[in-house]
Length: 417
Image (cartoon, rainbow, N blue to C red; front, top):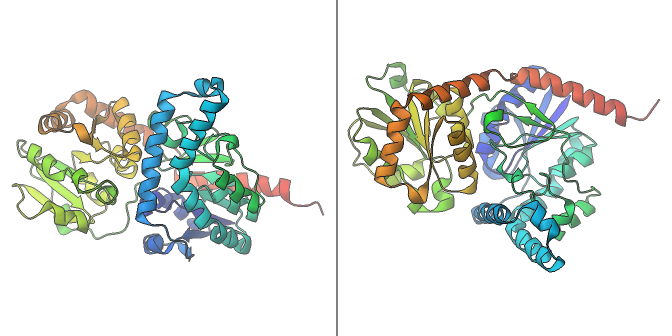
């Protein structure tokens, strides 16, 4: 069987797909990943075959898309679907124009990607297409290959909460005209739910409502890296990991880099601190560090966290679920829309503390650290969440289930002989 993966344009989103891609390969299936040039190396390092097409997305476009989604979430919270249905035509038109502006960058990304991934699907003819739900062009590739489309979300599916996100429950009537035109050009009927099912490695206790959900075990993968020798030595004090993701500072500005403030708060505790950062963020941290603080650049979290007692981070879904799969209490200090959703869901499950970056004073951070270090209810909830994650079907079982789904699809689409 041939399986085509279409990740979102950030490597960290692809990391959610890697365990399932490995499972298909281990079963003897062919796997191909569609990539733009900027993420191709990260995809190749996971051991997958990659087709690189020259669709490039600018950092500004991605940032505009995140800000648009944040604005969409705010207006959706203020105007629920019932109010929208009862609104006058004039108000409905105003809201739709607002949504079009918010989705503009995401639609532009779909327009840039569409021709290349459709060409790949038509030439390679995969039996199954698996995409991130944010890839609005993925249904076009599935249509070109006449293959079923599956979604694989990046953590809590916050985009479904608004009711207006294309390909994630929104009626095509709400879609921007440019997106409907793109679908028409590729002879694809717009659909509120184009995916046959959603393979979901986010545990149900942290997830929003998703139709046709296939629960899957989250298996941590945070990229490749070396295991430093000091990780083989047991820590002498409780070890706290502090990390800030791979793109938070780039997307939200230098003022969003709160690691120095976190380290100031941690100085009052008898703990060992390991800070893992990108090279760019490491320069912002400087060299005047508190005692018992070790900095490791680009150390994959799945290598570090088994030795830790708790974690403090910016609310990235991959970071949150990696820590959750190991039963670690978490302090999340979130800023962007894609960070607030994991933070809110984890706090609601009782397995950590969620703070908004704008509200994260020294005193509030200190209180959060005390909770994740000493509150027994929080630690028990983190353990319960770990057990929930490990009780889900492993990637090998999911691959076998999807092979049956694909076989059934082929049986209904092949012409009779």
